[in-house]
Length: 131
Ligand code: ZN
Image (tube, rainbow, N blue to C red; front, side, top):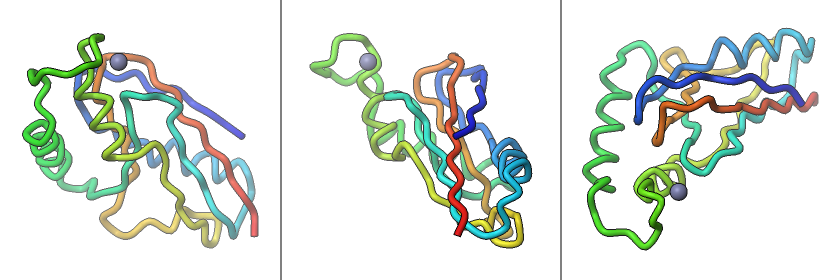
């Protein structure tokens, strides 16, 4: 298993990590298989969505904020209950097929680290399984 870190800059943001993940696939020399990308955090997530138009990520963050407002009353008293809920909504991992040594992402797809309680330094774990 490999890992890398991502320094986030805002409380909430999506950071494109596709190139870091592809670099690990390149180094593995695996041509066909599965790539698991996982974040070991409770207030950050992983998702795949459009990367060419940055407004898509902005819209997702804005609608998540509407769905789970930071200012509501929560039982969790650390002050970041909304971030925990948003992390559960996005999930902690994605699995991407590897074909011809490349992540088989769609034309418009990118892998995003979803920060919901930054700025922080986040760790991303990458496990590659050859088939
Ligand atoms: Zn918390």
